[in-house]
Image (cartoon, rainbow, N blue to C red):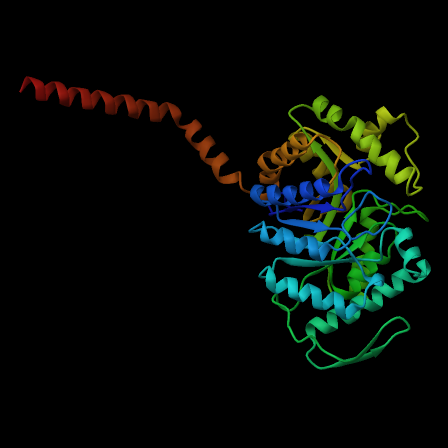
Length: 388
């Protein structure tokens, strides 16, 4: 993709907080970060839904978004994601349309199957059916947001009888939809079926077979063509962990302990995912080398995004996975560095000022000669007036 096109920047906030700290203060920091991103000019923030395992403590992204919306002015707020098998689709549509009005069209409906098996287990949901339940639910949600005739529908897990939304979406034709794609092709298949945006991890975590980013996009395009829809790379968001500092060495040291804790304490020891086969103090290096995190200076971040563009064939939105892996001031500073030095590189906002600087630099000798001549003339006029 042309690097001068305006790439969008956002965050994907699960969030991740260790289980030994005050959860109320952790949520306050999450809200503070959203406010800071709004000030810095980030485009989007997606908020997750989780109900177990201790680290990801936002149970209702809609409630969090309603709170964050009152503290921000510009940033778009998405559910990242609502786990559709956990909810009646009418209630999902109704709540999102309400948020659409309350935010004057700043919301995005991000959907998924549900990331934590422990959540599905608590709710008595057959984990093998989550993907087909999500497909069925999303189809009904889009119909509710776009159709005005009453809908009657009977599933084996929900029913609708002459159902219609009395409040229509604020955005046209409906609240934008994004589908998460993490571990299997089902997410991009569903996105293609409904012509929705896609949110993908920088390295797909396929547990059955190895899948590349380009593979995923091809599946999305094939699914869209099969169902008479289109998907756009401009609506494709790639999610990666990011931490920046003034030097590469400082950035690595900032998160060496915190990054290892996220990987070992949560993803490995709590969730049971495989951990990198390296010592804890080398986990950051491993994650960077394998394109799962971008850690370093703003220039390193620019290089990392360009690398992901090449790996994927092009995408339109770069999403930072929010990590609570360093002191608060270092995390906030990392986002500031990204906004000041990385975002402009991909949004075309440097072209005018850099061209102007080069133009003036190229004619600086002539301009200095004009300046000296002007000063000399003013001096001569002054002297002449004094003599007269």
